[in-house]
Length: 120
Image (cartoon, rainbow, N blue to C red; front, side, top):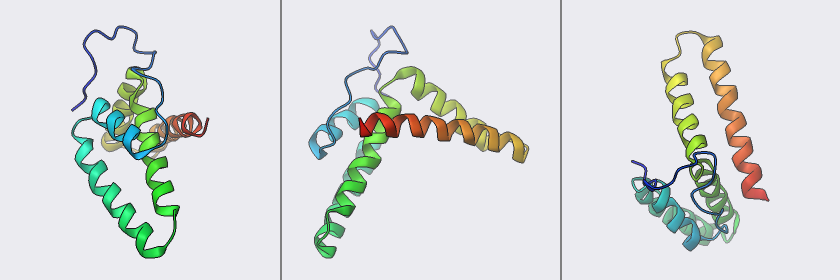
């Protein structure tokens, strides 16, 4: 379930600026772009925090923040979010290996674009 504002007219423009990679900012953004993902966000946050404490490492938290930053980057652009959903369906419904590979390559390009946005 997406929570895109009805009044947003240009699907190529982001719904909001890319938030900083902090737990609080990403929590707000995740809730805004996909309310149903908020539960998963909370579960993964607590798991990453617990792993960070147990291993005395910040890597689990950095990984968590990056992963959810990419999630937000993919979905804060309505056109990109729609293409993501379309490609996921196409991969799931592909009848040939070549078709699945082609759509998977497009998915990889979307992920790369979002990862660059997060790194900026």
